[in-house]
Length: 106
Image (spheres, rainbow, N blue to C red):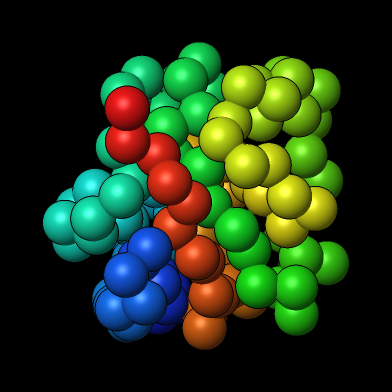
């Protein structure tokens, strides 16, 4: 099972195994990663699963679609490395992915 590294806003690192086919958001929720709120449950409708992907991993992700891009406009402090974690499907190739959790609380 691939390991995903979540780094919370307080700098705490959480290396957790996430089943292939789950989203990076589901991996965070299933492992109680603080800061991934996911109010819409992964429907790409709220931006509360916003994270910053480590630059070394950006090219390995599927391209962002227009809906995700539009929803990220509503995210707090969008950056070039911003993605909605509900839109990233975990694959074996993402073993070691590093996600910095954004400020997603309201």
